[in-house]
Length: 393
Ligand SMILES: Nc1nc2c(ncn2[C@@H]2O[C@H](COP(=O)(O)OP(=O)(O)O)[C@@H](O)[C@H]2O)c(=O)[nH]1
Ligand SMILES: [Mg+2]
Image 1 (cartoon, rainbow, N blue to C red):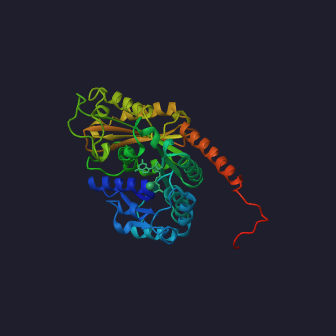
Image 2 (image 1 turned 30 degrees about the vertical axis):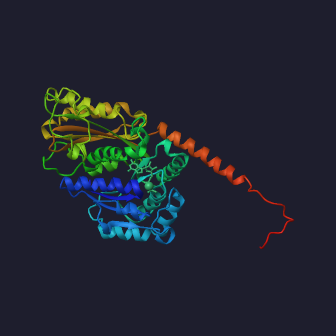
Image 3 (image 1 turned 90 degrees about the vertical axis):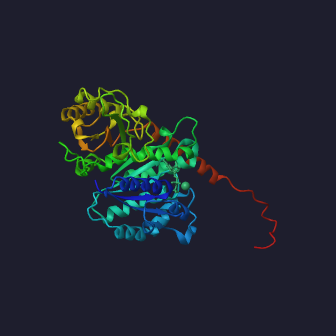
């Protein structure tokens, strides 16, 4: 699918930069992107989005220093300068685009506040769906981050055509600091969403039997709300031990996938049908980008990517039925995505989920924080007797 990305804020910019890096490495031209920020240094740190496509907003207000964690300021500045963002998008070109995807960390200031505003603007102007890929903060980042994320997400659910969620706290390791985890987490994000977002594009491996096209992804996302993604891969060789690194479309850009993750022995090359079913089950039962009870999902899309020989049609059909039995709704789309690789990947998109523990937690923290703020406002600052005159008025 042809996607126009907007990387909003620091996390958003970095992640979109990686999607573009992957596009370049693969020699594709599926993705287009701009980055938007109130902080000049964050924009300078990007490597793959062209300089002219990095848009600094709020200069008169924050002088290129960013809005910190003030997402209301992020929203205000975006409202005031929406025209310059839209101009940058038009300059980059929107012809042939299937969808817009705004990527942002929802706990901060610029991306958290600016994204819902930009979604509304884009929806007014373009016919294509406007999606968001939102990153949830870890609890250790503090209540304010959770509060920001809850407010941003509440607004996004109303404004965006669908919001994909990736939860930092579910993906960082025990004891690992969130900052040192970022690069690894971003790799996980790009690997999963990279395969999904590329579905339907013509690869060198030729035409698949039942290729997923962009309209199927769009229809799966039609219910709105929040979506989550599962992913699993297996090596193609019968021994289950491929020597090549797991990079490219299936493995992402940095080959940081541990061999162990890739080479779980799943009847490789023996029973192709069973292998596909097993892989899809692993994708859905494993860790989702936003962990949740998948039985609440309204719609799903099953995508199996790999060398054409491995993409067993019966396996994909059976896997789809299995997914259908396990989600709330009955709409399960799916198909294959033929790519040259020594691995097969299964991606399961679970759309319009009903509930997720982390979202409830965020909502609770946001409520508490709101009460704290209200109490703080009620507290009167110390005053001296009004009969005593100050030195000057
Ligand atoms: N996964 C991931 N999350 C990040 C990264 N950088 C920041 N975050 C998260 O995004 C939130 C917002 O931070 P940031 O993007 O710096 O805010 P902004 O620049 O004001 O939009 C933080 O609370 C972090 O949880 C990153 O590189 N990767
Ligand atoms: Mg930052």
